[in-house]
Length: 134
Image (cartoon, rainbow, N blue to C red; front, side, top):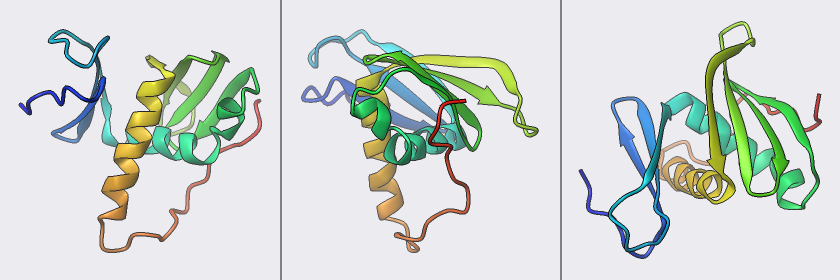
């Protein structure tokens, strides 16, 4: 396990094809809230934040059921984002997450750094995110 970086209240940990998001109330805390999601869902959520999350970043609410790959994203407040996993046919599954906005932003930043370090960095994926609420 990595030592917690006391400068950041959010810690992103990759673990066996999953991403663990740790949210500390204060940067120097030892205790934290934690969410674990498949790496593909984390990548899709990050892509939504970078592409489709502009509405939320601009304060446009509500954001309802925006689909991006393996997740559907909703937000009814500026500080909390609701994420539902989608099955291979695009139907919502029983798995969901309610993440603080700053945790999603930190996840997107971490995933962007990871993507930029890959050999084919800069090439866009073929999957796109819905920008309109449905």
